[in-house]
Length: 155
Ligand code: 4NP
Image (cartoon, rainbow, N blue to C red; front, top):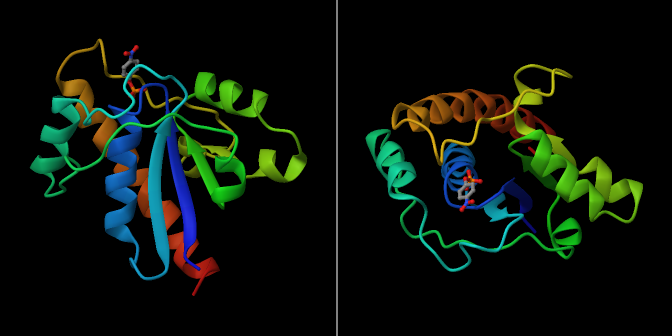
């Protein structure tokens, strides 16, 4: 059984699809599987935002086959690690947990880079186009740390 990692944001069209593509590119596919979801329901079934697809492509990643889906309570059982993009996602996901084991699976992704600082990956949806490159860089740095840890923990 592969180790399963879920990336979560609000819309599942900007940040978490990028996080999914970036982390998946750093892990061996036979041992790890990476998915993403949004706490909101607006973009179910949709492709990632064109600006996320473009910034991924610039860094040689194709995320255009991903489709939006909504986070659900089943995900606490289905996934081993759940990374959320910001504090608001964290609160939304934690509100859905029913036990400490599920709560322990949920981490703010940038705490991997800046432990205990609770820094948000800013939502680039309404921002300037270069916000997507900034988000890519943050996620790439965090995913380097995550991939190294996961590969060490699950050899
Ligand atoms: P994401 O960005 O959470 O990084 O996918 C958003 C995309 C769309 C919306 C909100 C956030 N929206 O409100 O439609």
